[in-house]
Image 1 (cartoon, one colour):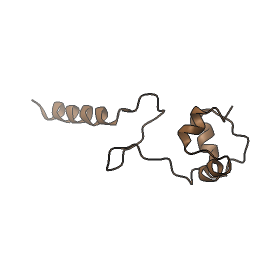
Image 2 (cartoon, rainbow, N blue to C red):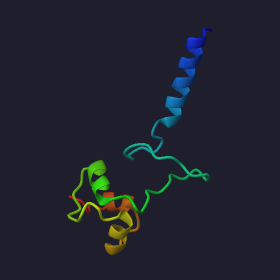
Image 3 (spheres, rainbow, N blue to C red):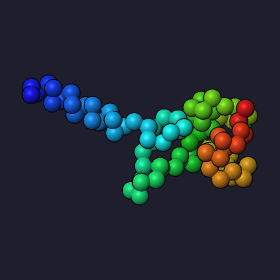
Image 4 (cartoon, rainbow, N blue to C red):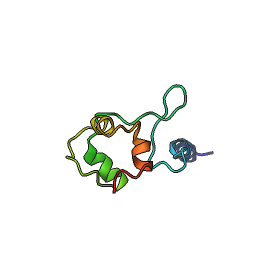
Amino acid sequence: MSKSLLIFDEIILIMKKQNNDAPGMRGNRSRNESGELRKKRVDTHISTIEKQYGIDLNVRGDQHLGTYLKDHEIKSLNDLIQGGQGK
């Protein structure tokens, strides 16, 4: 097998490992050491969440996700997205 084919095979293996292994979740998110999907950082700006998920939360874009979740008594980003808070 030629060197270029070996490199190609390695690239394919890396790409397969990067596939989204959480059906229904947008994008790829890494897993922590126990295998759980890592949580979205609470200092993520709301504007980033709105762009990524195509929603409008009607708050300032520079507000942090953690502050928004706390103020609205929402446990997680998933609960926010699934609960239909953003329209």
